[in-house]
Length: 182
Image 1 (cartoon, one colour):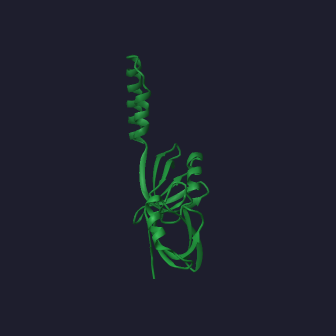
Image 2: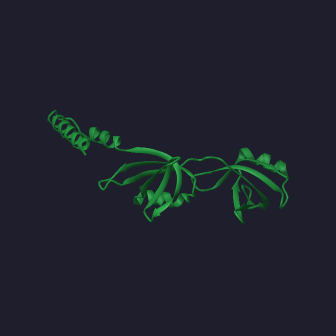
Image 3: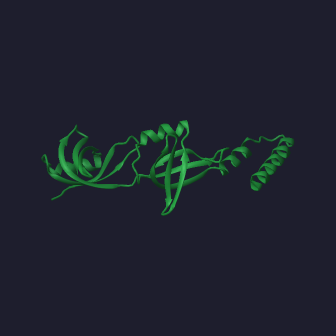
């Protein structure tokens, strides 16, 4: 609390002196506001309430962050799963809550093994993968870089494949590598 009072006194003095000199104070104010913005990277744990989520920062360190209208829209499109790595920019609001300003998924590549189903079109194919006790279908995107290697595999329905992929901003699963498995 004392730091905040000192910071406000310094800000007030800077505004008064700068104002007397006839200079623009907007740059100073935005600089101070940027100082209040912090960044965290961690593993998404889950929703705490409809407007908050929990992030694991370190092994035994967790923080809860408040979603704003802007970040809620981004958050909902991301369809995060427990353990997904994200980076957030946030600041402490007047109530002391950690309010998100920006959320980004860290595109870590993932590996999956499954049964080839077939082409959805020229750039996408479907694979059935095990998720716990059940099977689910996933659609993967082929880039020009991977397409020739994919074509050389001459896959048939139910061939087992190993895929390394990342998820792009549109939520598409983009293949980095693919190979036949046994």
